Length: 215
Image 1 (cartoon, rainbow, N blue to C red):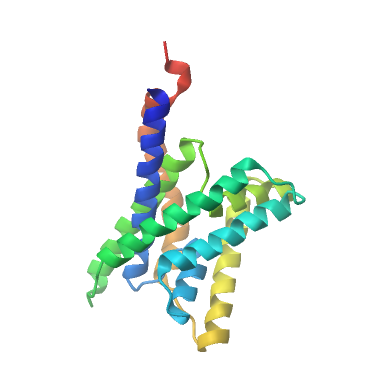
Image 2: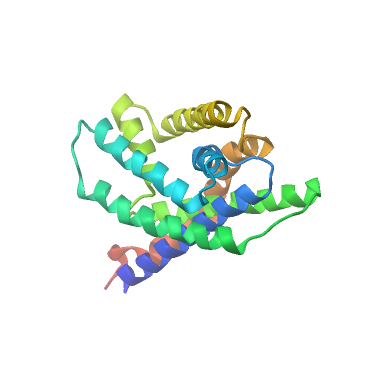
């Protein structure tokens, strides 16, 4: 039963993460750093966001393997089918959510909601300790490779993602795409959302899903 609840919570986390990522791109205020590359690719080359995200996630898996000295783990390979499913969910939300609002205040509120959903999705999916999101897996592998903590590695990945997204935009369209206020707000916002969610719900999730609580 605990495994069942863990699987359900994991799915819920990924769905909330996909919803948060998609809503973030709809506000027009700038996407979070980790989403900047697929968003730029989707806008420039006119492919859907899910497919662009899948391409980036596959590179993240390849990057993990390279960072570990070409040592391939089963957990790394499982991230590929997970990324395919995750990107399909993003496509569903991308097709469903249509926002065309000129109000800065309303878009800012939607941005806050997107950041909170993303943070909650990350917190739940990571805490279930199943197959990690490919971007999170790459960040973890980078931290291990350079001997730094996850937070430091996350900063490197975020900064690199923004630089790569800006470069892609300037080279292929002559302008910056997807980088704005939302990009700046998302960096601390997602982290704080994760921390607050864990503060109030992490112990409850542990009780619900931990095998150690089985009789």
